[in-house]
Amino acid sequence: MVLRWLPLALAVTLIHAAGPMAARAGIVANGAYTRDVETGLEYVDIGITKGQFPSTFVQFGTWNSIHPSYPGFRLATTAEAVSLMAAVGVGPGVFSSLAYYAPVTTLHTFMGPPRAVNSFIDEFEMATRDDISQPWENPKMRSFNFWANHNSFSGGIWEDSHSWSFSDSRAGVLLVRDYANGVASDALGASVFGAGSLDFLSAEGDGIWFDFGDLFGSDFEIQALGGANLTHLAVGSGFSDADDLLTILDPTGDVVLGAGDLHQFSSPVASTVISGLTNAGAGGPTGVAGLASLSNLPLYLRFDSSVVDVTAAVVPEPSTTSLLVAGLAVLGGLSRRRRSAAA
Image (tube, rainbow, N blue to C red; front, side, top):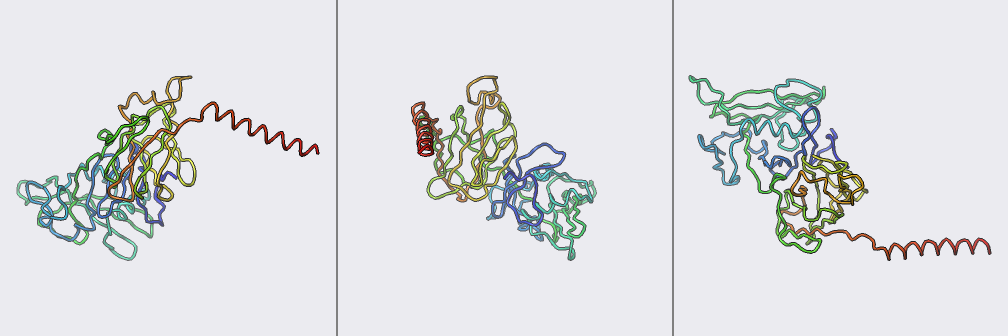
């Protein structure tokens, strides 16, 4: 199924954007990190940084990570924090709203655990590097407090500030980094090109975009090799064809996806089939000429293995001969049933 919102009683590993904001593919949990499928940004969970001094993780001034466990990360800007909020369909400056309960608890689930204020209110706070200090003040960081009331089923996001030297049990610095092939426009190209097939060797399995553009015009199967399984698949927000939809095969049956959709398979699968890519021209042959606005066909794939070999191959269409043989077999069966009934 395509998850459009969070079942409140379940711990989940993805959420699709909702609400008044533009469609976004969403976020995916990745151990101690949370990945934004669309922006290519990966965030360290606030549950790791909260309650510690910012200087434990980043260097003042450069804002780059100095923590040996988080190389390549940096202190997030306010804009990068707002982008993370947008991935679950909300924004800052809403103190209390029933509509914010599910998105805030989602962020708590992904990036927590939060701090319990009392028996029914949880919260955590992300500190970013945008300086909101006045000239006579010590350097301050802009922060965002995410709270959820499990009694009234409401939530909110309000802004605060912290000095550089703060330490707070509810707050932590928001660390972020860009990850390779993390955006659709930077989709990973195949390592090996064959006749109607593509191989991606030693690809990252924790969730990146793959380019299947060379298989335009046919249904094709994506298969993980070496015992790995596919857990998530997303379609880029720029996707379009004749009906702006494609179909994937889930263990429960066909699932139709559109631009910006992120699907978690009902159970991990070794392979799936992509179909339904249609020509935008009326009466044209089956194909993907309607995707002329895209130079490729980027799909976001996440596996249950950190490194994976992936192969994709065109699904052969039934030949005229095989269709004729199948038709004759059906007719033969009907004829036998008629003779049997007559007897």
